[in-house]
Length: 235
Image 1 (cartoon, rainbow, N blue to C red):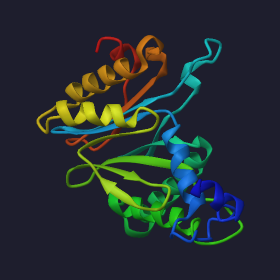
Image 2: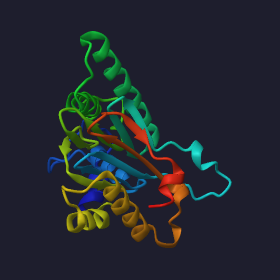
Image 3: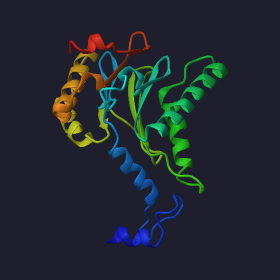
């Protein structure tokens, strides 16, 4: 009832307008769009960091390899977006430019956290000024600096660092599974098996390896690497 009254009074018509109880409804709507997005999992392992994402390819006529869900940002940084994927693509392109500019300016790769902060600043900007809407996307960033790291960026512009997390439509169920089964001693191969099993559980009969996109960064070489589908099939 309160939500309906807020809508009737127009408090959800602009991201710059607070409701009487201190909420930014457009930003909350953006967060809801993330909850309806395809699921993605990030796991920090003892030998690197891993991303596993659902492409949500349900049409058999779609060429699954043409759907890119995980993106390389820099040699040592990767990302996946959940929610409005078109918003994520724009932000990831921005992240690539920031990483390149840092390398050209300073001659060293950008730290993952510095890049995350830059993207979160962009997200926050679109919650504060009129004439636009908030980005309806959360982005999981993985990277290896001095150690392997995993960050999630919220539509509000907030970021958090995790050891393991999930985002998207099956977020709650997979987070519960990770809380029970995640171990800091896991290898990337162990993490991949855990993530695949999690997707099998939440997708059920809809599970298909064509839907799964996987990439990792090892701590020893700090290089973004995609997992070949042939290797994925033996997990």
